[in-house]
Image (tube, rainbow, N blue to C red; front, side, top):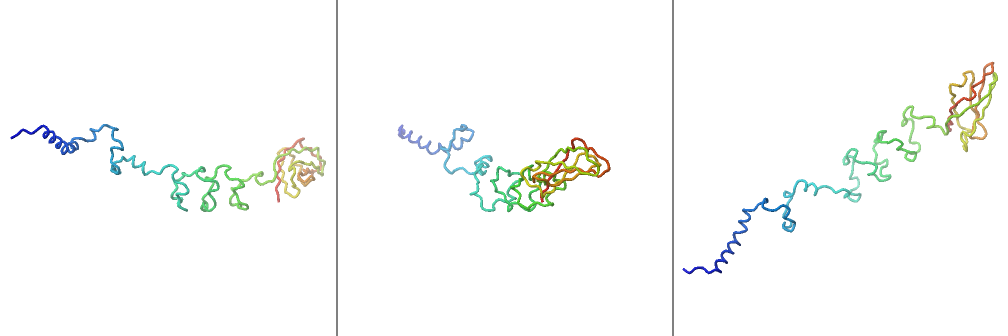
Amino acid sequence: MRRPSASLVLAATALFVALGGPAEAERLLDGDDIKKGTVTSKQVKDRSLGTKDLSAKARRSLTATATGSIGDAELAANAVTSRSVANSSLTAEDLAANAVGTEELGDNAVGQAEIRNNGVGASEIADQSIDGGEIIDGGLRAHDVARFSGSLEVRLPAVPKQSCLPAPVSNVAAGADISGDLVVVSASEAWPDSLSYHVRGSDPPGSFVFVACNPTIATVTPPAVVQFRYAVLGF
């Protein structure tokens, strides 16, 4: 037999490598033989990876809703209900001005716990919407219901027996007319028990007259200065 030529040997060797080399490489190579960070998207066949090839963290990041990705345009009418909102997840910053009206609030949904101190002003309360049922017993003070209120000092000389002395009080309600209002005054402990007092209207209409009366049969001298509190209640 003739010895095969060098070209035939090379051709046979090349054919062996072409047919058996990749299969042998697939059998001998695994992930540990590939250098970390060397495989990029260029080496990965398009659309060849499935969800099982991704880590749990990667799957969560792909399915999570991006911050700010949902706006008004993505929500259908009435799509968000009380069941869709976690407790305490909404704050004032999440609500547009005038976004919450009476139609969005259930009966008795807002109580004292939901209103911050001084959170409700006159512009938030409709006329005639508050009556005695909404006011805590003892919760109102004189200055909450009076048109004008404050304190004043009364200076009177000795009051003769069975007589009265007036003491005009001015600038109580400067620029206002209180002539038809109810004026209530309360004296301090310094006022003598033997003297009574009352008030009446005066001119100008923003003032009133304090009157001290002595019903006894002897002259009574009050302290030089007596502190009084007053409230003007409108009718």
